[in-house]
Image (tube, rainbow, N blue to C red; front, side, top):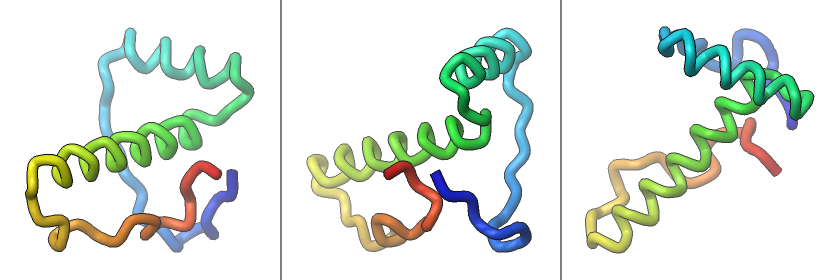
Amino acid sequence: MGRPATGKTKVMGFRPPKPLRDEFEWLAGIEDRTPSDALIEAMHDWVKKKRRERATEGDPLESLPPDGESDNHPK
């Protein structure tokens, strides 16, 4: 998975509960992935899920950015 050039994307920070963070980092490690790559994949999956939900509910999608807005999504 490609990584954008430094300074090209906004950094996000948050504080997950320690047990969740520990397990997440362990799982990413056993798959030889960085936590950042795993989080980016999870975010893409969540956005796709929400797009499908909104489309089936008849909600307009105009307020959402176009699909594939990010260059840094799983292939």
